[in-house]
Length: 82
Image (cartoon, rainbow, N blue to C red):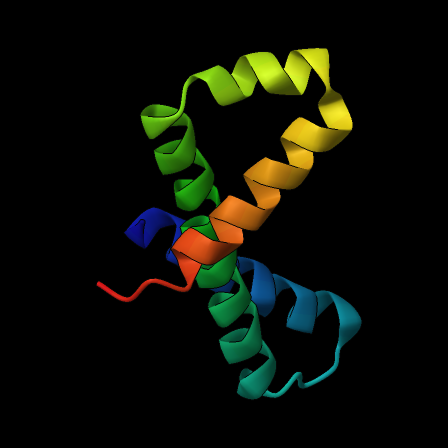
């Protein structure tokens, strides 16, 4: 995880250098919040598929329905606080 954050910060610095613009660090904070959001969302998908492996078969048979259920459930899981 630390490596991912370091790479994001490195990319931020490189983009500042390339564009020759001073990008506010607030942009970096926004990006890191989004990364956290995406990671938790993807973990929710993995948890869902662990407890409900038949969802994979449903997604193969009925892609739209399976994906819809997967997304709704992942978003519901994401809302649960540890």
